[in-house]
Image (tube, rainbow, N blue to C red; front, top):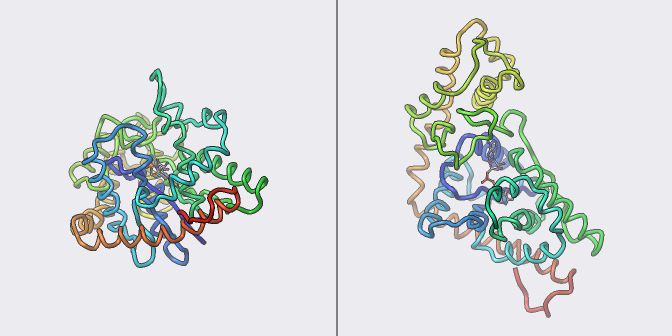
Length: 330
Ligand code: TYM
């Protein structure tokens, strides 16, 4: 299958990103054709310091390799190095409706309280649809917060196909059971996020063991004292059980059994060890890779391979829409 996904270079990549999406990227390398992008053009929908953005883009690229993406097997590149993304986004913008864009919950959340929002924040889901459709992607591994965006992408693809013939492959989202929505450690009613003010609300992939332990030991729970999965009444403990299960590959009921009669302290302390143990090798490989020639070469080569595929799609799209006079594109 052709697999595509992307991550925004916004710093603080956390275990929600990892357990919801990045971990799938690695698993899917086996037997599929995978394309993984660092979506720097999405990142500028809110103002970014240019030097910081470039550095964050390289950070995510290095993390991609550190978690186990192999540039010999997967295409890894920065979105803005492939002009087809912007080109297709414009074409799709002419096929999407302002009504459906205004219903996007992420847009509503991000623009809430502001008198006016950047137009790019509004059209963000269309650029995301372009990312996916540009590579004839069949499968899109993401966390559940992207469900609505994937649905919109499918709607646009189907709409264009109904009007112009089989222009696009209609993709499917791929969501994991335990990792699809990791919640904030200090407020289990909110999603774990890169931008939350309290650093203890998340575990970043590059945190050291002391910080991981502190975040987990301080995580909000309840006063009942039993390690039991019950998202409605025990959202904090249920979130920690999900994290434990995702890192250890043990099913939740088995973890519940293991900690029957034990207090939250013992459970949290062992979870901290499990998480720190899983993240330590990633951090080690990241440090080796971040400033290496191997990373630069992987990104250069990835962009070249991505341009070749996207060029073919754009030629087909332009032909279908009646755009251009045959001078090429992509
Ligand atoms: P971004 O950069 O916000 O997040 C990257 C990935 O992490 C997932 N994720 C989570 N999963 C579980 N629990 C959480 N708390 C959590 N927070 C984030 C996201 O679902 C995502 O899979 N719009 C996308 C980037 C994008 C994209 C694409 C993705 C742009 N083009 C094309 C797929 C295909 C985003 O902002 O992800």
